[in-house]
Image (cartoon, rainbow, N blue to C red; front, side, top):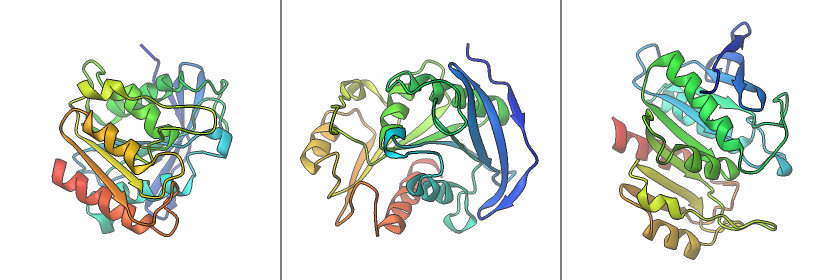
Length: 233
Protein backbone atom coordinates (compact mmCIF):
# COMPACT_ATOMS: atom_id res chain seq x y z
CA UNK A 1 0.00 0.00 0.00
CA UNK A 2 1.31 3.44 -0.94
CA UNK A 3 1.61 5.85 1.96
CA UNK A 4 -0.77 8.78 1.72
CA UNK A 5 0.53 11.19 4.31
CA UNK A 6 0.51 14.85 3.29
CA UNK A 7 2.03 18.15 4.24
CA UNK A 8 -0.52 20.95 3.84
CA UNK A 9 0.31 24.62 3.55
CA UNK A 10 -2.03 27.50 4.39
CA UNK A 11 -5.06 27.84 2.16
CA UNK A 12 -5.27 30.64 -0.38
CA UNK A 13 -8.08 32.09 -2.45
CA UNK A 14 -7.85 31.55 -6.19
CA UNK A 15 -10.09 31.93 -9.21
CA UNK A 16 -12.35 28.96 -8.57
CA UNK A 17 -12.18 28.76 -4.78
CA UNK A 18 -9.84 27.99 -1.94
CA UNK A 19 -6.51 26.37 -2.80
CA UNK A 20 -4.49 24.01 -0.63
CA UNK A 21 -0.93 23.23 -1.64
CA UNK A 22 -0.03 19.70 -0.65
CA UNK A 23 2.84 17.25 -0.72
CA UNK A 24 1.62 13.69 -1.25
CA UNK A 25 3.64 10.57 -0.56
CA UNK A 26 4.15 8.77 -3.87
CA UNK A 27 5.99 5.56 -4.80
CA UNK A 28 9.06 7.50 -6.04
CA UNK A 29 8.99 10.23 -3.39
CA UNK A 30 7.01 13.37 -2.68
CA UNK A 31 4.44 14.58 -5.22
CA UNK A 32 3.79 18.30 -5.52
CA UNK A 33 0.02 18.82 -5.52
CA UNK A 34 -2.78 21.40 -5.39
CA UNK A 35 -6.33 20.90 -4.16
CA UNK A 36 -9.12 23.24 -5.27
CA UNK A 37 -11.65 22.98 -2.47
CA UNK A 38 -15.22 22.23 -3.51
CA UNK A 39 -18.66 22.68 -2.06
CA UNK A 40 -18.89 21.05 1.40
CA UNK A 41 -21.91 19.07 0.17
CA UNK A 42 -20.16 17.81 -3.01
CA UNK A 43 -21.14 14.28 -3.98
CA UNK A 44 -17.90 13.53 -5.84
CA UNK A 45 -14.21 14.35 -5.69
CA UNK A 46 -12.00 14.59 -8.77
CA UNK A 47 -8.43 13.99 -9.88
CA UNK A 48 -6.78 15.51 -12.98
CA UNK A 49 -3.56 14.19 -14.57
CA UNK A 50 -1.30 16.41 -16.66
CA UNK A 51 0.36 15.90 -20.09
CA UNK A 52 3.86 14.67 -20.85
CA UNK A 53 6.60 16.57 -18.98
CA UNK A 54 8.98 16.39 -21.94
CA UNK A 55 6.65 18.80 -23.72
CA UNK A 56 6.43 21.09 -20.72
CA UNK A 57 3.40 19.37 -19.22
CA UNK A 58 2.63 20.17 -15.58
CA UNK A 59 -0.42 20.46 -13.35
CA UNK A 60 -0.61 24.11 -14.48
CA UNK A 61 -1.15 23.20 -18.16
CA UNK A 62 -4.00 25.23 -19.68
CA UNK A 63 -6.14 22.20 -20.60
CA UNK A 64 -5.68 20.76 -17.11
CA UNK A 65 -6.59 24.14 -15.61
CA UNK A 66 -9.74 24.48 -17.72
CA UNK A 67 -10.76 20.91 -16.89
CA UNK A 68 -10.32 21.75 -13.20
CA UNK A 69 -12.55 24.81 -13.63
CA UNK A 70 -15.22 22.63 -15.22
CA UNK A 71 -15.31 20.32 -12.21
CA UNK A 72 -14.84 22.98 -9.53
CA UNK A 73 -16.23 26.37 -10.57
CA UNK A 74 -19.84 27.23 -9.62
CA UNK A 75 -20.84 28.21 -13.16
CA UNK A 76 -20.64 24.60 -14.35
CA UNK A 77 -22.86 23.32 -11.54
CA UNK A 78 -20.58 20.61 -10.10
CA UNK A 79 -18.35 22.34 -7.50
CA UNK A 80 -16.34 19.24 -6.62
CA UNK A 81 -13.00 19.26 -4.79
CA UNK A 82 -10.32 18.74 -7.46
CA UNK A 83 -6.79 17.45 -6.92
CA UNK A 84 -3.97 18.13 -9.39
CA UNK A 85 -0.42 16.87 -8.97
CA UNK A 86 2.90 16.85 -10.79
CA UNK A 87 4.11 13.46 -11.97
CA UNK A 88 7.46 12.22 -10.66
CA UNK A 89 10.38 14.34 -11.83
CA UNK A 90 8.11 17.28 -12.73
CA UNK A 91 8.18 20.58 -10.85
CA UNK A 92 8.93 19.87 -7.20
CA UNK A 93 7.88 16.21 -7.39
CA UNK A 94 10.66 13.78 -6.54
CA UNK A 95 11.85 10.88 -8.67
CA UNK A 96 12.56 10.58 -12.38
CA UNK A 97 10.24 10.40 -15.36
CA UNK A 98 9.65 6.81 -16.46
CA UNK A 99 6.78 6.80 -18.93
CA UNK A 100 4.84 3.93 -17.34
CA UNK A 101 5.62 3.91 -13.61
CA UNK A 102 3.60 7.14 -13.38
CA UNK A 103 0.64 4.79 -13.00
CA UNK A 104 1.75 4.53 -9.39
CA UNK A 105 1.63 8.31 -9.00
CA UNK A 106 -2.00 8.32 -10.14
CA UNK A 107 -2.88 5.62 -7.64
CA UNK A 108 -1.13 7.47 -4.81
CA UNK A 109 -3.23 10.54 -5.57
CA UNK A 110 -6.37 8.39 -5.68
CA UNK A 111 -5.53 6.92 -2.27
CA UNK A 112 -5.18 10.41 -0.82
CA UNK A 113 -8.51 11.55 -2.26
CA UNK A 114 -10.28 8.45 -0.97
CA UNK A 115 -8.86 8.97 2.51
CA UNK A 116 -9.50 12.73 2.58
CA UNK A 117 -13.08 12.82 1.28
CA UNK A 118 -14.55 9.31 1.38
CA UNK A 119 -16.43 10.12 -1.84
CA UNK A 120 -16.70 8.44 -5.25
CA UNK A 121 -14.06 9.83 -7.60
CA UNK A 122 -13.99 11.12 -11.17
CA UNK A 123 -10.61 10.95 -12.92
CA UNK A 124 -9.74 13.21 -15.86
CA UNK A 125 -6.48 13.03 -17.78
CA UNK A 126 -5.08 15.07 -20.64
CA UNK A 127 -2.76 13.52 -23.26
CA UNK A 128 -0.07 11.46 -21.47
CA UNK A 129 -2.08 12.01 -18.28
CA UNK A 130 -5.12 10.45 -19.95
CA UNK A 131 -3.12 7.36 -20.88
CA UNK A 132 -1.76 7.01 -17.34
CA UNK A 133 -5.20 7.59 -15.80
CA UNK A 134 -6.80 4.85 -17.90
CA UNK A 135 -3.99 2.40 -17.16
CA UNK A 136 -4.10 3.19 -13.43
CA UNK A 137 -7.86 3.06 -12.97
CA UNK A 138 -9.28 0.43 -15.30
CA UNK A 139 -9.62 -2.85 -13.45
CA UNK A 140 -8.33 -1.43 -10.17
CA UNK A 141 -9.70 -3.70 -7.45
CA UNK A 142 -11.98 -2.00 -4.93
CA UNK A 143 -11.67 1.32 -6.74
CA UNK A 144 -13.91 4.26 -5.89
CA UNK A 145 -13.54 5.63 -9.45
CA UNK A 146 -16.97 6.19 -10.98
CA UNK A 147 -16.06 7.85 -14.29
CA UNK A 148 -13.02 8.40 -16.51
CA UNK A 149 -12.57 11.24 -19.00
CA UNK A 150 -9.67 11.08 -21.45
CA UNK A 151 -8.94 14.44 -23.09
CA UNK A 152 -6.67 14.39 -26.13
CA UNK A 153 -5.85 10.70 -25.67
CA UNK A 154 -2.75 9.96 -27.78
CA UNK A 155 -2.44 6.93 -30.02
CA UNK A 156 0.96 7.79 -31.49
CA UNK A 157 3.65 10.38 -30.89
CA UNK A 158 7.07 10.94 -32.46
CA UNK A 159 8.69 8.19 -30.39
CA UNK A 160 5.87 6.07 -28.98
CA UNK A 161 2.69 4.23 -29.85
CA UNK A 162 -0.02 3.83 -27.23
CA UNK A 163 -2.14 0.70 -27.08
CA UNK A 164 -5.35 0.37 -25.08
CA UNK A 165 -6.50 -3.23 -25.54
CA UNK A 166 -7.27 -3.37 -21.80
CA UNK A 167 -10.21 -1.03 -22.40
CA UNK A 168 -12.18 -3.94 -23.87
CA UNK A 169 -12.72 -5.09 -20.27
CA UNK A 170 -13.05 -1.68 -18.56
CA UNK A 171 -16.70 -1.15 -17.62
CA UNK A 172 -16.21 2.17 -15.83
CA UNK A 173 -18.04 4.95 -17.77
CA UNK A 174 -15.54 6.54 -20.16
CA UNK A 175 -15.48 9.74 -22.21
CA UNK A 176 -12.98 10.14 -25.04
CA UNK A 177 -12.91 13.84 -25.90
CA UNK A 178 -10.46 14.99 -28.57
CA UNK A 179 -10.04 17.46 -31.39
CA UNK A 180 -10.81 16.28 -34.89
CA UNK A 181 -7.43 17.78 -35.86
CA UNK A 182 -5.45 16.23 -33.00
CA UNK A 183 -1.78 15.86 -33.94
CA UNK A 184 -1.33 12.70 -31.86
CA UNK A 185 -4.49 10.71 -32.67
CA UNK A 186 -6.41 10.61 -35.93
CA UNK A 187 -10.20 10.38 -35.93
CA UNK A 188 -9.86 6.90 -37.46
CA UNK A 189 -7.57 5.79 -34.63
CA UNK A 190 -9.98 7.09 -32.00
CA UNK A 191 -13.02 5.60 -33.69
CA UNK A 192 -11.29 2.21 -33.80
CA UNK A 193 -10.31 2.55 -30.14
CA UNK A 194 -13.86 3.43 -29.13
CA UNK A 195 -15.27 0.54 -31.15
CA UNK A 196 -13.18 -1.96 -29.19
CA UNK A 197 -13.83 -0.38 -25.77
CA UNK A 198 -16.36 -1.81 -23.31
CA UNK A 199 -19.57 0.06 -22.59
CA UNK A 200 -20.43 2.57 -21.25
CA UNK A 201 -18.39 4.90 -23.43
CA UNK A 202 -18.70 8.02 -25.54
CA UNK A 203 -16.41 9.48 -28.21
CA UNK A 204 -16.61 13.20 -28.99
CA UNK A 205 -14.44 14.79 -31.71
CA UNK A 206 -14.58 18.57 -31.66
CA UNK A 207 -14.44 20.09 -35.17
CA UNK A 208 -11.45 22.35 -35.82
CA UNK A 209 -9.88 21.52 -32.44
CA UNK A 210 -6.26 20.40 -32.24
CA UNK A 211 -4.54 18.39 -29.50
CA UNK A 212 -4.46 21.37 -27.14
CA UNK A 213 -8.05 22.49 -27.86
CA UNK A 214 -6.74 25.86 -29.03
CA UNK A 215 -9.73 28.12 -29.53
CA UNK A 216 -12.01 25.32 -28.38
CA UNK A 217 -11.44 25.19 -24.62
CA UNK A 218 -14.96 26.37 -23.87
CA UNK A 219 -16.40 23.69 -26.14
CA UNK A 220 -14.24 21.11 -24.35
CA UNK A 221 -15.54 22.31 -20.97
CA UNK A 222 -19.16 22.16 -22.08
CA UNK A 223 -18.81 18.62 -23.45
CA UNK A 224 -17.04 17.43 -20.30
CA UNK A 225 -19.56 19.00 -17.93
CA UNK A 226 -22.52 17.76 -19.96
CA UNK A 227 -21.27 14.19 -20.04
CA UNK A 228 -20.53 14.13 -16.30
CA UNK A 229 -24.00 15.41 -15.49
CA UNK A 230 -25.52 12.72 -17.72
CA UNK A 231 -23.50 10.01 -16.01
CA UNK A 232 -23.52 11.09 -12.39
CA UNK A 233 -26.21 13.60 -11.49
